[in-house]
Image 1 (tube, rainbow, N blue to C red):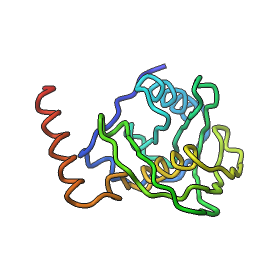
Image 2: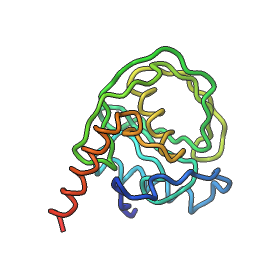
Image 3: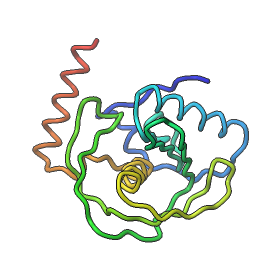
Length: 167
């Protein structure tokens, strides 16, 4: 398996709206495996295709402590959102950045698994927040979009400074 490069803000490719997954063949299976490897190594609990410059409606998640519950969401769509919760979020495309974001605390989502089979999931808590966060990525939206322009600008400047120092 190959570890993929994670795009970091303010890379404009993170703003690309993803296209539907239509081919669940060998290349797609390899992409899913590579995304899980990349996510686990980062380490993270979710990774969207857009974050690794793969602009298909795909994200992978595993919120389990022991990395034993990998979930694949292809071509997801929300059926229902309920309640509101504010939770601190981080993102692999924003290293070291955390911010409180309000999202639905319960969701019902319909998607296809890695083999193209359709499933529906009713969930809440961290998994629901993670699904919404990754879903935003395939829509070209980032968690900092929920923040004030002042906070967003401050994060951008800090990350740009960090990039300059790492070069």
